[in-house]
Image (tube, rainbow, N blue to C red):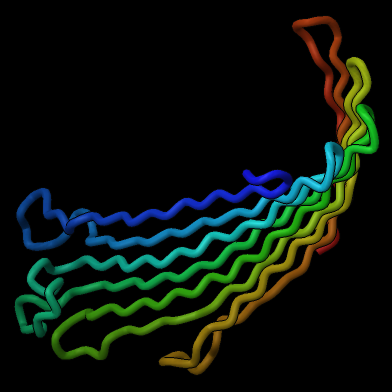
Amino acid sequence: KIKRIGFTILAQRNYQAAFDADSDGFTDMPELTKYNLNPTLFIYFNDKTKLSIGGTFTNEIRQGGDTRLLNNSSPDTLHFYKERNNVNRITTQTKFEHKFNKVHTLIIRNSFNIFQRTLEITPSKTLIDYKFAGKQLSSFSEVAYSFKKTNHIVIAGVNFYSDNFWEDSLQSSILRNEGYKTIGLFANYTVDIGKMISMEAGFRGDYV
């Protein structure tokens, strides 16, 4: 953190070797290589207002099946089955928070998610490989207001979800595309009754 700006970053590489527990020639745990990068920027405008913007970037390759085929060997009549997954994901996170005073707070959130996946299965030496690929784009947005005073807390707001999926035209003539949007209103009230008991009531309505 430097004055009113802060920054964090998380970088990971995960590797898992293929494992055949019962020595039958097939993986019980797939081979996995995964990279993950998560930077986040924080801006503190003043003591009452702050903003955070972050992203997560992920790449994952997962393969399993006949252990002899994991090194890209050619299938034959005895060794043929193999699965390979390739996943790419980008996720954004944005949050704005403003405290008017000790009682009233406004919070705005947003997130976008882009998910791409390819799948290839070799079912046998003679059959054609099964191939699938598609992309999903989803989002979440929310505006919420909170009121907190003594032992009373009220949170109310509105949020919006969207989800769309597009399948790549590889082998299927009928693409399994779909999409939906949802808008919702919510409110929640919590009151503390003494130090050990609290009561909570709320409602939510969605239109899809």
